[in-house]
Image 1 (cartoon, one colour):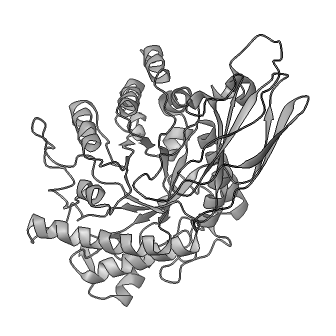
Image 2 (image 1 turned 90 degrees about the horizontal axis):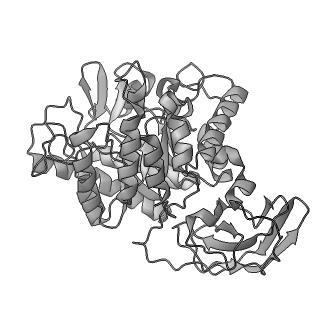
Length: 472
């Protein structure tokens, strides 16, 4: 069965596809597991290296945890996960460290912001927020929640998101729990409730885009948008149950992407995938899969459940997101091994085609210096046409000339920051192409190397000789 699934997936390998992972920091569930700076950084580097080897291209790192943060904030205290002591600095900036390490590996890094829940009523973050805003936080059980019916909630969350966007080179702001809590007794009409949540999203969108318009705004909605004509959500959906009009946010342009929490299988999954696809409005959708359910201590799902879901998402032209990182890198039920095969080749993140920014100019003076074991490529950076931060580079290689830059098999490296790369060739003659992408993902026309002389050796899969068998 797995062999057939792999064969089917390999035949339809896309050039553009979101391949994302949530890294959960609350209680150190995924990271950090240690409290020393050196060990924390080593842990994160190890996680990101494994993600890169599986051709993951998007990391969603939990930055605002529960009215507490993993970055230095003037508004909220340090989260306890970093040092074991609430409010204590770890001595470095974990969010910046994660962003920089992601970018070194050609990955996008999105700051995951938990919005409405603010943690235990007497926890450090909640207590300090209550002291500042006495009438803004509602208590349900022993948990505190920002009141979605008060305008101050949207104002405050917009300030948080604008601050992160301004200070950090994030690729996205990713909102979590941007909805009524399921434990909230909603007394307003559902229409009014949706207007309340949408009003918060509008304020955040305006604040983020005013800082950096290329930063994607996304959220992780409840996995079923609403009841379908033939399939019920059985009382748990985004639009009606918790007033989360996520599809409307795509339609109106308030959101650039959605990562729906589709932690289901069978008819609770597939019909709702089609619904998200049909209501994506040209934006990006990368459903979250419940790989934690593979664990024997959870639901002990068979790996085939996740494999089939990944195939369907690819067939529908959607991305995929794994919840959560530790289950993935721990290779529970071989999910990591399967994904490395499934994602045999890298993929570019889909461009923000709804933004009318011009594509960059091609690189100039592409030079290939042929060495005995590797080719050294250098090129000249084109002048930017717009003020949209920096440019990134994609490298394509093939034993054929000219290199087909539309074939994902030819993509060697994505989102390089520097105009140089060394590519091992093991004595083979390879041809190259380089393209430029801006922060919106718009790609330039390719610049080609001069045609390489044939090596005379028996042709092999050039991906194998460049990337090595371990990346197959």
